[in-house]
Image 1: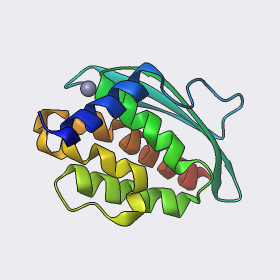
Image 2: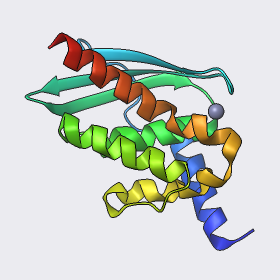
Image 3: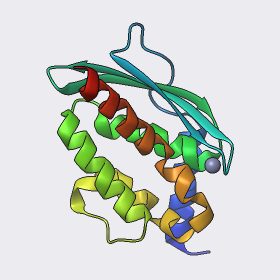
Length: 143
Ligand code: ZN
């Protein structure tokens, strides 16, 4: 096992054991459920949105280490940024997980690049982001 493999596994393990921003928001501006049937991952994402900025975010759910750690890292990455920046970041993250070279804006999220080689886990890693996109779409359609 390479050094990088070790780092990648440690980060995933740490975030899955102690996910950041766990819980619910009451009231949330928008809540969205996400499901990845191929692995059995489930999560619920709650966003607080003010003036087109994600001011707070929480999630709860059950799933594999990759889905939980990716969602945990996502909540850290999107807190405090605008909706359009969050949507752009989501596109860049999905592109990386689908095998493209990661862009600098991804920051710490680049540590998950190794998942792009685990084809069966791509849906686990993107579940949080797809759920975010659905939540933002619903919000934008109703506001
Ligand atoms: Zn999974």
